[in-house]
Amino acid sequence: MSKLRIGICGGGIGGFSAAIALRKVGHEVEVFERAAAFNRVGADINLTPNAVFALDQLGVGEYLRKSAARPTFRISRDGKTGEETSRLPMSAAAEEKYGAPQLTIHRADLLLALQNQLPEDIVHPGMSAKSVDLTETGATIVFDDGSRRDFDVVIGADGIHSAVRAALWGKDDPKFTGIVSYRAVFPRDKAPDTPDTDAFTKWWGDTPDKQIVTFPLTLGQEIFVFATTPQGDWTEEGWTLPGDVEELRAEYRDFHPDARALLDACGEVTKSALHVREPMPQWSRGHATIMGDAAHPMVPFMAQGACMAIEDAVVLARALEDAGPEDVVAALQRYEDARKPRTAQVQKNSLANDWLKKGGNADWVYGYDAWSVALA
Figure 1 (tube, rainbow, N blue to C red):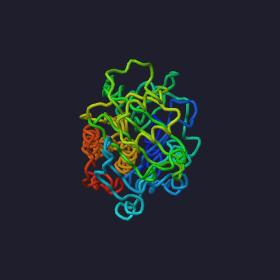
Figure 2 (figure 1 turned 45 degrees about the vertical axis):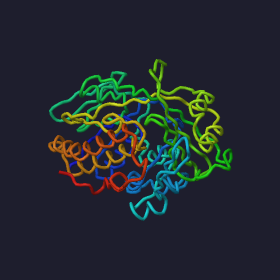
Figure 3 (figure 1 turned 90 degrees about the vertical axis):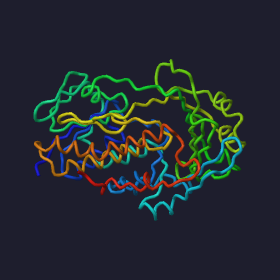
Figure 4 (figure 1 turned 90 degrees about the horizontal axis):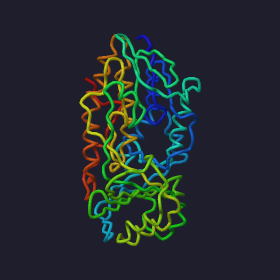
């Protein structure tokens, strides 16, 4: 096998995971990130067993366990009455069943764990991809500063506003869902009498777009809150803005006292618009492809956005494992064929937002093994 030279646009969870996996199968990789520095941004990542299992094989699992929390259960409760409608054992039970537990962790800690698996000289911050030019035998990344880099394969892991996606398939703005989200983190001891703070708990409202999700972070020392509510439009500049904690509490004033106690413990909050795209009929063109949010952005109601990007990274590396330059197009098609049905189903179920509301089987999500799933 000849080594492929692979350029990845996007130094996030998907891009770093892909870089590690591709190096693991023998290819040369460079990662280009538009941000000038990797700052500690973003509050949380919920890694369900399918993602943790994949990350364990990438060599970062032990590091993640040093700072992550391990939710004891996945619980659904009626937002108004507090009635428990489902309870799925996680932690040791999930590890026994799926080969890995659920881990909830600060996004920055996950990114650092992934970045530490890569040589410093292959990660290039402050380099923003503007477009991609395709050739018969490769692809060229064109950067905002006018510079160009040639590769055998180019991968767009550059998020919902992907420049690689736009270069391959034209500009396509994501659709506002009519839902906004609030996010906050607070010390666990600010809600000492609230039950099940060591679990992942989802409080369901009267409509699918109104809910509160809470789970532990930082070895259980902090609690993360994610709440959504309908909003007619989003005219503010920016996707994530400072929120109003009193506005947050007012939105859920008719929820159960246990849920309101969690909101009462919140200090600062952020407010974001939720956007989505319809599943794409094709991801790859020539020697370039896309992955993660660039390919299949989804609302976070199944907590699978980051997990799907990690799965993409592993399957993409496996598809390219024995490929030389002449095999790239066929290899990218194998990657697509393996991933599109699953990601489309998760997109659809996430938008419906009724998964595990009243019990059900989580095996089709949590039991997926990106390292052994069949490739055509």
